[in-house]
Image 1 (tube, rainbow, N blue to C red):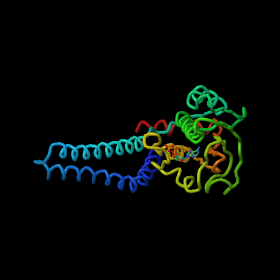
Image 2: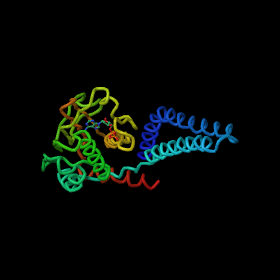
Image 3: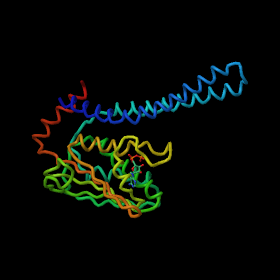
Image 4: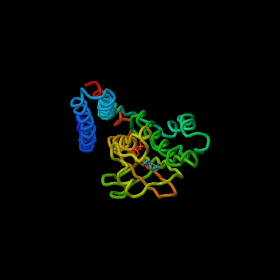
Length: 259
Ligand code: ADP
């Protein structure tokens, strides 16, 4: 049942993609068809002109192939294998990786609680999410500034954060002193393939993957951002259940991944 649910969620995400993708893909196909058509009609014309039309067609096809590859790797993303994760251990263990990723001119501050509640998540996805947030922060700060990762145990009343959160959550906040987001960017930031970065630099998948991971873990993502001041992205993840319950839960994801 869990595997089915995950599959449904994944297909929903893929479904949301297809509108925009189909549009882009059609534009690329139009370039391919146009190029081939011109080449066919001018087949007895100057070689250079025919080659030019064929080259255009090739480029369109290559871009279309890159687009479908991105879509497929997104749809086939790894299944979640949750386990009990202690953020007070996991996050400091990423310190070297974060230092290398962010460069010398960004100071990293870890403000972590020793008694932070454990969470029940896929540790690789959790690390990936933090790394993605750090990379976004680096880009927003153009290589210079302060990055703070903070943890807090929070008890939420219904309606305080998101529509469905209530009870005990670990909040991990990643704060930067970067360019911030306009309201328009913040509203679209979780959309798959939405990016404001140059071609080749951004895929537009970072925040949408984080959104998927956190929601599948029963949590919520919140973005607080001010243009010119900076951005704080907060991940709310449910506190792990007591050990006895957790062992019961643990059977499902592992078994599901075999089917
Ligand atoms: P990508 O980073 O590949 O563009 P994301 O989904 O991670 O894809 O982010 C989508 C967009 O959200 C970015 O292109 C950027 O405009 C905006 N964004 C994300 N994180 C930040 C941040 N920390 N500060 C400012 N803007 C951000």
